Image (tube, rainbow, N blue to C red; front, side, top):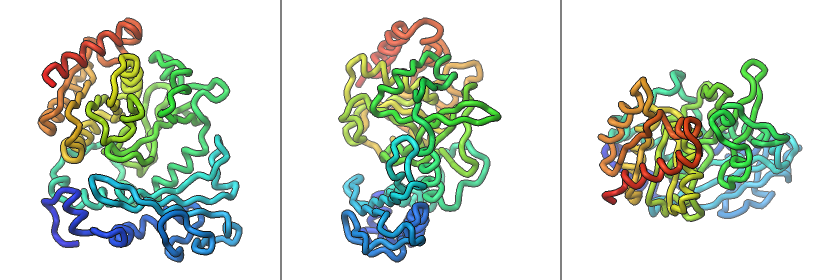
Length: 367
């Protein structure tokens, strides 16, 4: 690729891969690997937009013949078109444990190309880097993402047979709240050594595509797959149907903790607020990376609030100061106690909601 170090993502795409064919060629290795997860030989498939016919789908194992599906559709982002591939195998070994449906292997080329853009762009290379995982990231991220997708699909749904995570219970989250939330799909797993854990799916801010998950254990400790780098990823909950599409979001509330974000989400809905996205970075060092994405990729979100952890370490305050320098639209605030869940546990849910409403009103008083 030619030198495009000072270009925005949109300019980079226009320069390096203006056509759909160019985008597919740049993502070819990722597509081959993702298809192989469900026994499909992508290199030998004959592509046409829409659902591919069985005769156009090549497989590795004879048992998969006629049992696979490939969907080749177009997603639009920021005025550009990007190929989106879904690979499925309807053999039993490739199905979701909870639903019985074929577990898809997915490649959203928007995300793949965005990663390639960041690798060679000075605008990104000089950016704040989250130091979450000391291990080098997986050499083929899409292969790892689809392996994580299959693992996630084998986990049981939260609330199945009354099972829930002790950490969430102690923080004041009722099982029914999680089960009844239509936009929330967290799963439960079990480790003989560490006990039950919950899997929190992660995505990019600017696109709704599964990119992996982070495990939260009963003591609140967070662990991820060894080569999985959650930097720049988040968990995202929209206040209403319109906010499911990032293009319609005008207000975004960022917090580190999933629990705090979930409380804020419920309170946002109960306060009747529309067009609001509540976002959890899960790691304090991840928040500046998310704020940078808002600054560079999401200019239409006019109200951005970071609620930082007000604890004795003061790391939340330090991170908030970094974030404030990155994004001019950002407001920062905190509660009198360490975070929103501490307000719920220390007082009660209704009192915490009143304080949350006051905090929003004060933060956005000038907007």
